[in-house]
Image 1 (spheres, one colour):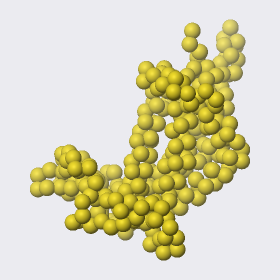
Image 2 (cartoon, rainbow, N blue to C red; image 1 turned 180 degrees about the vertical axis):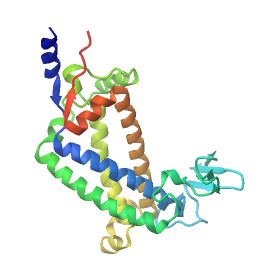
Image 3 (tube, rainbow, N blue to C red; image 1 turned 90 degrees about the vertical axis):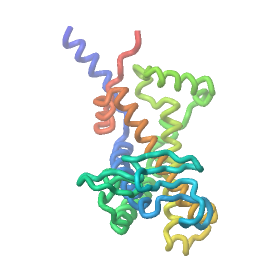
Image 4 (cartoon, helix red, strand yellow; image 1 turned 120 degrees about the vertical axis):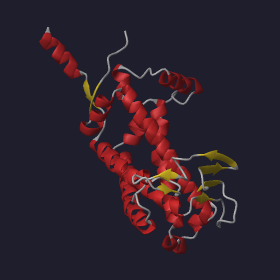
Length: 275
């Protein structure tokens, strides 16, 4: 009986992720985290965002993180929110009150250095761009995108999407063979990040680079100006951060051991079917 159970259990271990997907996932995870943290330090140099070609302290900003003598404040589209202790005004590990936008624990480097942050950001921006391009080509060539990520007929119906949203809200995750496939929410979010947010982030980053701007000025024209490119870059970064937070939450709720193992070894143990 025990032997039979072992055989049955072993057959439920299936291949879920290809090697190319696993490699890109972990390289990209480290790269995006470093880019986010170094980007926050760059933002600290001028914690205001504008739309259009120009922006300076005297111009109206749609986003601003600042500090007064007593508190930190975040202003978004004219609405001001106190953020003392988190953004704008916070205490560092030495007990010293700082008035930069983002705290040191969230930035690279942790001590203010615009030059160092730019070096980190530029180096890993190339890792993101080149790695993403290779992943695009490889995933299309081995049909990972067409086979695993492209929504099937009927999955895009409002009824199907709403049902998937309800199941996730109730923490009712797929079981059995269905767990080995991406659901429609995963497909839409992965496609949106891989073919939407990441390319737009790279494009807006290129638009802010003086050398690229001089060679290809059409990029800034496409994005609506240098300050618009900076705003788009920041919005994409925050959207990717939100995706990471939700993604990690889903991993924990679905079973972190099984989920993480599948992204390391490629093997995934199918959850038991519901009775």
